[in-house]
Length: 168
Image (cartoon, rainbow, N blue to C red):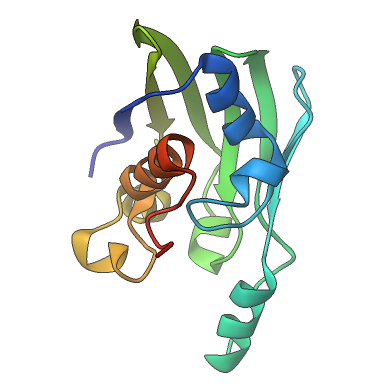
């Protein structure tokens, strides 16, 4: 498993709209795993994501608990609407919680009239459980475990159509 994973998607939306969809909990809770993410968008600012009621109910029904904060980290760089660098650590699972913080970079670049290329680079040195989780798998995607490729595809669907991939 590579210690650096890079994912790209082209989205028909402005850099500002994409930035907002990534950093605003009113938006980021609408796609991907639907867990709101909160940012203090300055160097040293806090980042965290909270478990949804559905996540907590699923965990309870399957005999385990998850913490209220399921992902945490720190903002290292924030250059709206083009670049966000942060540390990132999954706390839902004891294996990933025991690993070191990883580094996640979002880059939003113009790629043609009205289109942006969004690149997510996830540095995962020393974090093999994180690397496997964020890589996802085709089998896991059907159950919401498709990793970054699935999250970015859902972001694209929401911004371009107003609906997520799961919406009918």
